[in-house]
Amino acid sequence: MFPKLGAALRCRRGATAVVFAVAGTVLIGMAGLATEGSALFLAERDTQDGADAAAMAAASAYQFRGRSAALHAAVEVAGRNGFDQAMVTVKNPPDAGGLAGAANAFEVLIEKRFHFTLSRIFTGDRTAAVTGRAVAVLQSTTPACILTLAGSLTIRNSSAFQAPGCAVGSNAPGVSVVIPESNSSVVARAVMSLGTCNGCTNSRWDFAEGYQEHAPPLTNPYAALDAKSYVTATGAACLNTTALAAKGPIAPTGANKAYCASVTVSNTSAVTFTPGTYVFQNASLTIGSISSFACEGCTFIFRGTNPGNLSITNTSTANITAPQSNSDDADYNGIMFYRAPGGAAGSSGAPNLNLQSVSTFNLAGGIYFPDSYVRIGNVSSSSSAECLSLVAGTIEIGSLSRFSFDVAGCPTYGTAVASARIARLVE
Image 1 (tube, rainbow, N blue to C red):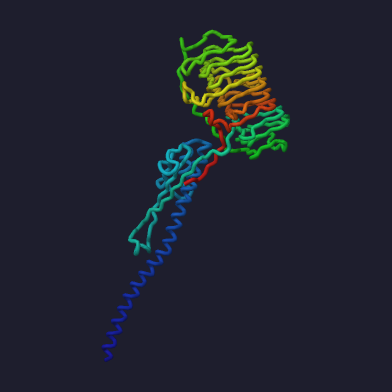
Image 2 (tube, one colour):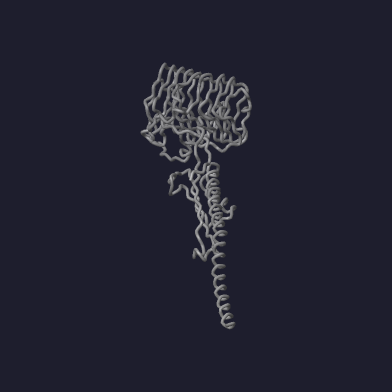
């Protein structure tokens, strides 16, 4: 009897060992699922956070330093968060999602492998792909009606400077905005300066959204024109090759012809130009000492190796609007005055664009004088067109009474507008 009992016990010990072996394996696998499942979740969260940070870095760098720097910034930030370059893909524009094809959007994809150890018993997999995807975009926020690119924006001696619906600002370093106490009142939606603002702390000024120094640069909506090529007018394409003094209107040139000598329109009662494109090649246009001047649907272009200047002064009324659709060249849609880069930059005493001593100035459209000096002063009132988008190298504004800056109506004229931008994570 006892020998049989011992055999039975030995048989049970073997079965128990098998049970413990199987149960132990299951317990280890379950522990692996618990611990490695948590680790996998954290890895996925870490990868997504890395993609979010890299996409935001790209969009933020884009507004300061351009596309190439933005792509590099995304990879660099991902690397600082522990993802090597082989794991990171940056796309601009994105090729998927709601912002596919958007030039101001950056898509970041990060993929790494997660290695299973204990939970392989159940999953059967040695590794799993962990991915993160994020899209950040530079979105326009506050529109800007006045922007300087290289020099200061100065507002002085005005009884009423009015820009309640738009920001004014400067992309220039140093003291980039100057608003001395000589003004009676200054109203703007906001002031944004890459450098500092001298006078923005004055409690008498009304800035609905405040002022910001050392701000990100505002967008330049006309920057593409800086590198625009054109055919130099020669021979018969050069109109009025001798200096022209005109009392009446001159004819539009179209995009491929030009006035190659300076033109003066003065000493008459009223002048109306025909809608169209007026090109001045190394030549200036001076309009003054007349009762009224009008040109609706007109673009004035100053170009050449030494672009000329535009002066409109001593005029009772000036009515000028840009064409929503420029029939000669769509690149100038919504542009009223444009002076190509190059030539003398001008000064307060010799500005490249001089709008002075006009009782009623009805302007609607874009003004782009990128490396030029613009001076506007002694202007009494403006129209209700609500579209004057001014971008220039340096701008001096003074002695305004009821002249108002606004860009709310610019869609009517097809006029692009500068704006502040902020990077936002959208996908």
